[in-house]
Length: 193
Image (cartoon, rainbow, N blue to C red; front, side, top):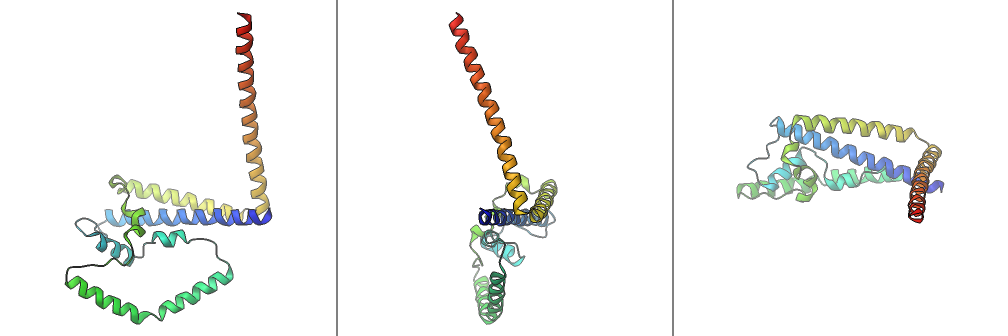
């Protein structure tokens, strides 16, 4: 059971980290659009996706991979980053090809469009300062929730779950009792008639 609680806690932390990443990216995106730092009007989708990529907005794939990593996973990730650094020559070739495509009027997306759907599919009415403020408040709440969860021991998490279960069970039993009482009143009322 303890192993399941450890995994559950890690999953909860990961989910909150994902929420924080999405809220942060959305707030930054909206703010950049409002302040004309990012122009999305009258542009092809590939151009917008490439701009988001170049501006280092998180892709959906990157957000989906957010989770707590073990030491060995962190070391493997560092090794992968080092390998990517050695691929600079390949990147230069890709950039040269991209320049050629631009000259032809074609632009190839650096990542699939769906990677930024969480940003580009937002309702137009969400592109407001009020929405930025709302997202930043939500992000702050999630960050506090994350800090509290990190401080919470597995045992405390278990106790909280039990307390919540007992509270819900009490509500259910009270409702069941009320339903039985009403049924009995109706049955007695019918017998008296």
